[in-house]
Length: 318
Image (cartoon, rainbow, N blue to C red; front, top):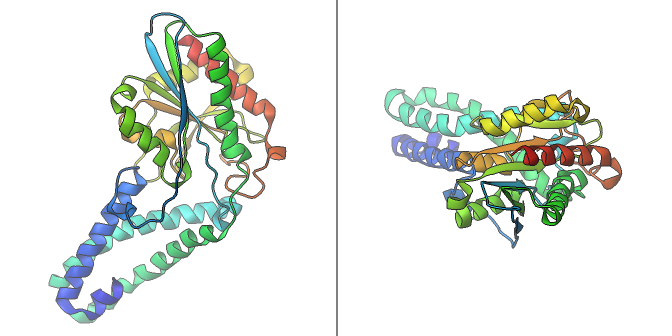
């Protein structure tokens, strides 16, 4: 697009501006878990969701969705240190702003600025090239074992479903959902939403993701999402706070998580009340996240059991 803008005259600048605005809008849709024109050329494979409905002990007064995704991620270079991850977040933010901003700049310069000033737009090229390399490199790497991300969350969903099938809660029906394709845009959750949207609007959702890292307590998320800050359901946030106060032994605390989205982000964008548990350590780091070291030996079984017990207390209070 930069070459078209610089070499195509006024018509080329207008065309480049329109294309950049289109791509920027499509990228924003993708980042917010919405259908995008950029979806169709992307190579795809088969996946699936696994879910079950656990009835209440008596008349249903509340329905709760428990979510833990099944798929794993690759092992990108940017996830090998907190500094590189912060750099990646900065670059993707700049690229997202630049895609939309450059579209307007191209259109404005096509009409307002003489051609000698046009090469100033080259300042954006290093950002685009940097983001291209940072997002292309992961596809050359192996997948993680996914012990923490997210066998830990899926295990809690299945364990709670098993317990509740044996001893149902009064008035509370639970849906246990393990999604596919969370790591590539929450496509499993998006598919589940398309099929069950009306029922989900009447539910509360609890998402469990990366909850077994060593050194992590019970961490529930106050803000999540890469582009637009998304807030959890006030009712669930207040309930988590109450359980944390009543059970200090759980070592529960609240933190924001805005590096990437989760299945709960997809729900929040679609106005479904949700709350995420993501095992951030007190210093804000996520152990072994998207690294080859995400293996069973680096999962803390006690951390998983504590999060499970905490969520069960929340369900009982409903």
